[in-house]
Length: 120
Length: 236
Image 1 (cartoon, rainbow over the protein chains, first blue to last red):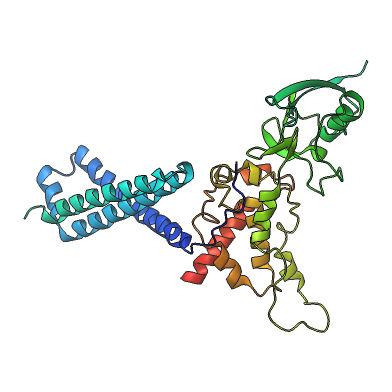
Image 2 (image 1 turned 180 degrees about the vertical axis):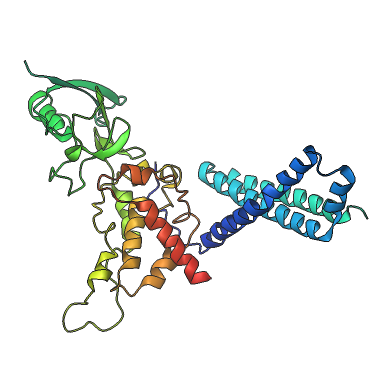
């Protein structure tokens, strides 16, 4: 059932969300398989624990790791926000979106702290 | 002995009150060319004059008889009876307010169409003769101008079901793209401005029900993606 005369005009904001969702998807598509390849090489025994830690410790991998986490959070936040906008039509929508934003941010900050504090 | 067609048709008359129900009918099969509209006409003319539905041209041009046929939106007048599983379930277009039986309220649908200003907008002085278009420029409009605004695509779109008050829906966006592509139109910027909205345009999640439903074989999803790409080009 649709409301008539409900046109509130244009928000001029849809583009950025769409753009960042796609951009973050590309970053995820490039970087996410890397983590599985790393895991795989460990399981295959090609990389032992110390070599793995060395790799995680390196500046390049911290940088890539940071990019991955930022892309993951941006992507997950926009995705969940869009889903909530699709299905929740009450004031609860804002509360849920805000809640997810706070949770995602805390998770991101915590993870980034782990990445950059690792190994002193 | 003639073959009969079994139908189960949605009935609802708000003036009489009560709940909507499905009513069974049996109609003689009149031959290979028989369309669903022929069966509905037979019911109305010979069996039950109270059955209410819209139809006009009877050949897929006016877009009046968009219906939900065995769960899929389409035009009754060009849907052959032969390919349909029986009993044929005939319902009004989904997510629409029913006025009576198979007739739905299309006001909001056409309000949304009006929102995109579906007419030529120009600022340059009118030339002495027509505003001309090359055959190539005209060809850009193929796949959009054929739309008959029957509403089959828009009412099959889940995004429009959930957010139809704000999301413009595939039919309207296909037409928006038609005017964006039109070489004679000079309001492209304003048109894009009007569409750049998380709900009006970007609520399309490429589910592609619209493409499946379109009785004219058009592809609104492609048109929506073209609008998104045009906005992207404008920004980057």
